[in-house]
Image 1 (cartoon, rainbow, N blue to C red):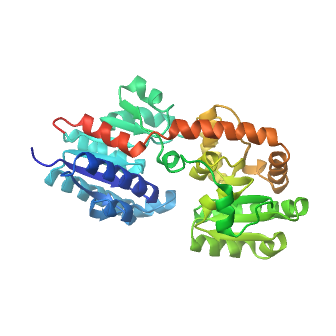
Image 2 (cartoon, rainbow, N blue to C red; image 1 turned 180 degrees about the horizontal axis):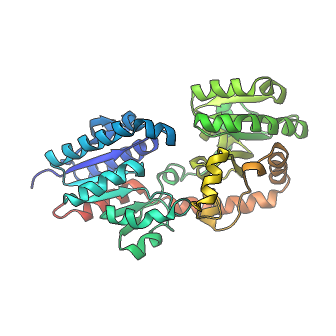
Image 3 (cartoon, helix red, strand yellow; image 1 turned 180 degrees about the vertical axis):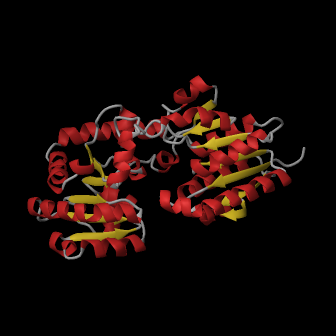
Length: 383
């Protein structure tokens, strides 16, 4: 039997981590397997030959995507031809749906089996995509258990594999070790402030969190207020945006310490995004907020692009408002500080929240990479 040839396509850093986990699982099952495609450092270390580098897809926002559109179309054409020339036994696309699903659609027409790992967030945004997604793929692997039923009416074979983040965090929280790592007192109150990871999010959110921190400092003068940033460049930008607020409120800015910060915190005020799932799985109570650019928010509301009544994953998973959500003008320093105080003064509410978090951590910790590899190999004749 000739070695199986699979193309793995990730489009951003989170996809590179998922792809690496998947590549290792595939190689454990089929040591002779050949893996190539568009990859980052994690996938390359796991044995995926880098035909193209993940940085070639790292564009964000409508304006930036439009500017790079001719290059992206040319890149997709080159990738398609390379897959056909190799030839690949299947295409495995990982997240980055705007680029990857178009490639999958083209290759499915050429007879190449197409499998996508990570459902687009159709339950929250642009549900009208579902029929087109179904036509583009032979199989879809999802991170959340409620997602397969969304695709059932369209005949797409869809399997829940679990969430790798839950696998990573399956041991639970260890706040004492996290506080020691960050040099925090074990009896002080710790509040985490998370403005988001993208520069646009920082521009909209950092000052809001700074003003919120001033109120929290007045209410809890002995507390530790941590602003958690995704990297050093984000920390530099946040410092500039805060200006004198950082010293006035006593905010400590940390880069690349999000997990430890959430594990150490008594509660968090977090911009909506994947970090809300991480906080939930670490049993950290939170308030979720977000401010879109006004024109974007108005367009989304006018076109009815938003499907879910909740935006944060803890609420979506539990089908109720487990955590407060403050969007647009509802996100004010006074409201966010009051939300923090409500959590910090109600231990019974915190206990109930942590019970839910433990339930969902167990539900999502399914060995995602191993299950994904198993389903992929099941999908391929002769594999």
